[in-house]
Image (cartoon, rainbow, N blue to C red; front, side, top):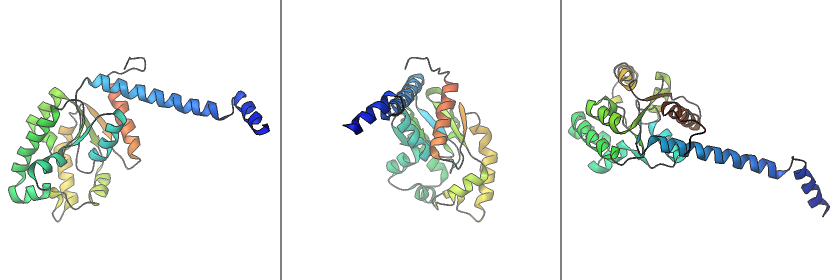
Length: 220
């Protein structure tokens, strides 16, 4: 009885368990409302992540989709499933032109799914037709990373066809020079760094709020 009385007195004084739990609940409610507003502002459009290999499109995309309560699609995975083989095998057997043609068709199909988070391959946004389709039906987000960050990440995998050469860093530099001006035409640009993935997800949500002109008082 004494212990129960002490707990009651502590909670009544504002220092017990209830106020802390209430604060957590309020933060969760505010976060949920924020994501609901973002979903509503997208108005059924897909959220398309673009950027170089190693920018974190798939990893961030999965977390972003979970955060927004949307389905996640990975264009490279969809391409492999449609072709019945891996992307390195497609490159080796049929060449890059064949791969890009299939990539264009798959992304066009995925864009018609509506409200999803879609991670695209590094070269997808370089295609004029794909870029137009994304602009017409979706909201594009460029995950921008510096060379050191990209190289640290891509070295962890040996399945990058474009980097299978004696100078992968030189190849990456060339890709950055050629592709970054095109990626810069995306609706939203967010820095992808080596910090926690959730920090990048939060930066994307904040950038979307600014781009879509979402205000805290807007109804979800």
